[in-house]
Image (cartoon, rainbow, N blue to C red; front, side, top):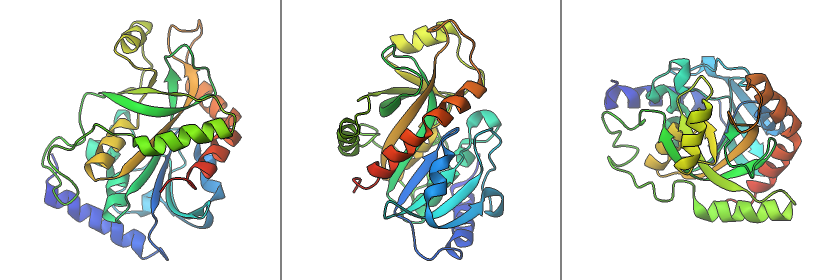
Length: 277
């Protein structure tokens, strides 16, 4: 278990590395999920820092995660974009999974848009839908705040009653209507992976109120809330979960679907970040 002093020291080393390359501090963080990295190519005046060049930063090992930290401007906003994330199933500890969010907080950032590829549980969804995350259920099996509290970043017992900031979500729903996209929101169940869920597990998740399931996001969002950040979450439904359709699941299908809906996703996020305060 890492101590608060050690973790904070690592954060400041990473911050020092990043700061010396930047012209200005970003205001909005964006985490891009599997296959959704194309948005990063639209960042203007970009400064690209491979994860491997940042002290103590983990490295992405999953197909569809490029592994770059990108700074610049998107739709007029100063952004920090993670082109690829880290997962508990890769063998990383929670301090490593949430390290990028903690770096954002150490830089003074207060806003985060988090995206992911997710399996659809709600039968009203279909592959290719963009769904706003209304709330989540943590079934990863561990909480990223376990252990010594990082008091410099947040309280021991943070409130999670508005985890995905409702004010932003209402604006995003309005934008969906304006762009003539299906107006969808739901509860995301975060699991550890890497195996896909069984049909019985999907029936269980549906019974407890989940509309989506995935292997990321929840630890990052808990850490973001702990550090006082506003969060908006967007899931791209890349496949219907096990047992809902009579077909096998594969990561190739995830990448294929995100490729297919990539333009819609990019256009939505570009419009969206203009209306987030």
